[in-house]
Structures are given as C-alpha cells and as structure tokens.
Image 1: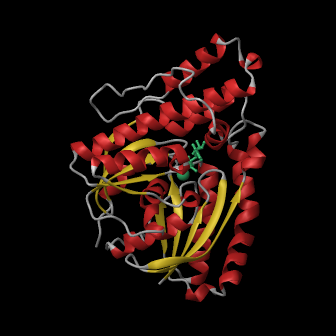
Image 2: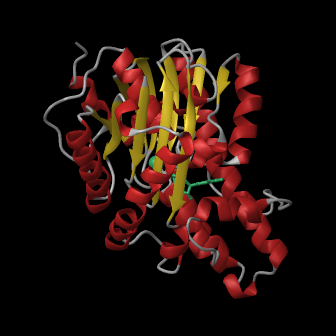
Length: 347
Ligand code: KG4
Ligand code: ZN
C-alpha cells in the first residue's frame, strides 16, 4: 500500500510517500518547505501569508516527490491530509488539494488530526509500543499528556491551563531578543550556559495532578530580565545563563509530569512528540529519568518531531489497519480537540 501524506496546517508545507502497512513500512520520499524565514520578521506566523506560501509550494512539491520516487498517481492507494487543528486558510490549501487530486485520480482521502500524527510519529523509526502507553504532546499550541489505549482511543489526562510549552519558549525567546521560533534559538543559546544562575519557578510541579501552566514562567523570565537592568544590560554569558535556566525549567516540569503520568496510569511506555520533543535537554532528561523509573522511552527522530507529512501518512496507515475507513463527509477543522476523534468508529 502506498500513501501520499500532505501537511499544511501551520508554517511548513510538506508531502511524503509511505509504503507498507501498519506493522512494517517506510517513508520512501519526503519533502518539507519551511516558511520560517518569511514569518520570522513578523515575530510569529501570519495566517494569510502562510496560506499563500502553501498554495505556491504544494503542487510543485508533490510533482517533484512523485518524480523522485518514480511513482505515478495510479500507484497511490490513499491520500492522507491534515484536516485540523491549525490555521483555517492553511488547512484549506492542503485539504482542497487532496480532495481535488482524490477526485481526479479516484483515490480515497483520509483526513488526519495533526496531533494524532505527532502522537504516533515515533513509529516511523521504531515500532509503536504496546498499548496502553502515555504520550507527552508538546508543540507550539499544545501541551498535553495523553493515555493511548489503542489507535483512535485517546484520553487527555493532563494539559496546560494557559500557554503551551512551545509558546513559553517562543515568548521567552522574544523577551531575550531572539527570533521566531524561539525553542531552537533558546536551545542553541543555552549550550554552555549555567542554568543555576537565575532561579526560575517550576510551575505546578508540587500539585499532585498532571496539568501544566507556563504563563507564570514567562512572566518570571520577564522580571528576571528586568531585575538585571533589562536585555541591553545583559552580556552574552548572562543571556546564555538565562536561556539555560528557561530551558531547564520547562524541561524539568515536562519530564517529571510525564513520569508521574506513567506511574499513576501504570503505563510502562512513554512517547514524547511535537516540536518541543526535538529539544536535546528534554530528550536527555527523560532518557535518564525514565530509565531510573523503569519506563521505556520512545523518541521520534528530531526531524519528525516538528511538523512533517511523514507522520500524517503514517497515522493514516495506522488508522486504516485499525479498521477506520476514509469518510465521505469531512471538513477542515481549525479547532478540533484530540479526544473528539474518539467518536469516529472503526468498521
Ligand atoms: O509541532 P510543531 O513543529 O508545530 C506545531 O504544531 O505547533 O512545534 C513548534 C514548536 C515551537 O513553539 C518551537 O519553538 C518548538 O516547537 N520547538 C522547540 C525546538 N524545536 C521546535 N522547542 C524547544 N527546543 C527545540 N529544539
Ligand atoms: Zn505540529
């Protein structure tokens, strides 16, 4: 079975070809065009600009991908496209393209929830762990702990009450004068920094629940910067130390709450996914602490943590194998809670 995956929910245009089934398969070709350089000067993603860039990039990208893989449309069994959540205009580019290609070439289209794509991404390089497992989903818009009982059975057992972890990185980076997206910039600046120089809070860690709150941390960063006389008064070492302190505060909270979730739900396997899961400090912290806790950690490759189409094609392979079929009626859905897809039933 060959699946062509398409992703246009935010600021990456991506397409990927997956060959195989749920048990074994591989990405045979993939392509990603990042719009980061276009949006960076605005300090964040501009929705209208994102839609136009997707429109300019996607058709040629798919043609080139098929050429490179030496695959023609009739060989494709399913199209998989991100149907939400995301920016409405951006989603419409990918979903309209998929619908049109599906109609012309008589290929069924499987709409995929973007976060389900992230959640299953470690299966691209490894096998998925046995159910049940816990996934920490950490992206620019989401910070959630999800109990996964089977494909399509997702229970949100913890989530942020305000900002997402990625958003905290992005906002803190802006306070430090760093460009968008802030996560990788903070990670770069933090290398060699002394995380102990600035004392930042570990929000919600002492509360015995699985929720997060990151907006207070961003405010603490703002006061810490003010406390040393503002960004202009900070030399390079001080900026490095601040970046290291921010990174460690976010990562420690994420790591401890994830392992608490595994303990509380007796789940011996943990997946981390989403853009923030590319963070090396988070990966290191969790590798060590999960070993100590007897939990097996599953990490997607860094390029499959941030937005990509390989995870969308792979999620479709998993859904089809689990008995879900391509629905006849569906729409692009900008706001779409992950657990809402549990109501879809497998045939
Ligand atoms: O999953 P993603 O690519 O897009 C969304 O679906 O949101 O996640 C983007 C987020 C941004 O907030 C970005 O700053 C963060 O992931 N991010 C990172 C790293 N790479 C991306 N945060 C920390 N460390 C990184 N290496
Ligand atoms: Zn994403």
